[in-house]
Image 1: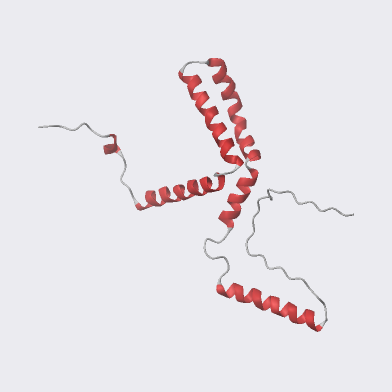
Image 2: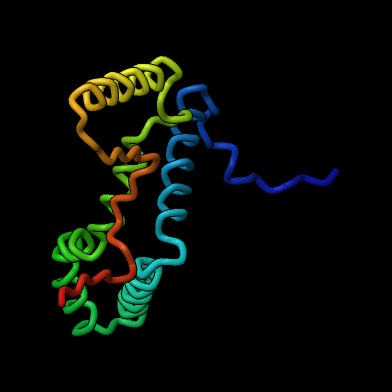
Length: 153
C-alpha cells in the first residue's frame, strides 16, 4: 500500500469565522494599497526598497559583513523615510478610508443640502445680490500633476 508523505498543512489551525474576517480585511487593505500605489512614483520607490531588502538578504546569505552592517544600521531610519516619501499616498489612502463606503450622501442629506442652497438663493434674490455657487462632487486630496500659473499684466 502506498503512503503519502505528511503535508505541512496538517498542523494548521482550523479556519474560523474570526480568522476568515481577519484574512478578508488584510486582503482588502493590501488591495487598496496596491490600487493607490500602482502607476505612481511610489511603485518605483517600493521597487527600490524591495531591491535593498534583497541585497540585505543576499549579504546575510553570503556573509558580506560590512554590507549587512551598513544596511542593518540604516534600517531603523527607513520608517521615517517611507513616511516622508509616501506622505501624499498616505494622505490619499486615509482620505479614501475616511470616505463613506457607499454612494456618498444619503437621499436625506442630499435633500437637506438642496434645501439649504434654495434658502440661500431665496435670501440672495430678495436682497438683489448675485452669487456664484459651486457644488463639489468629489474631493481629491492629491496635488495636481500640472502646475497652474496665473500671470497678471
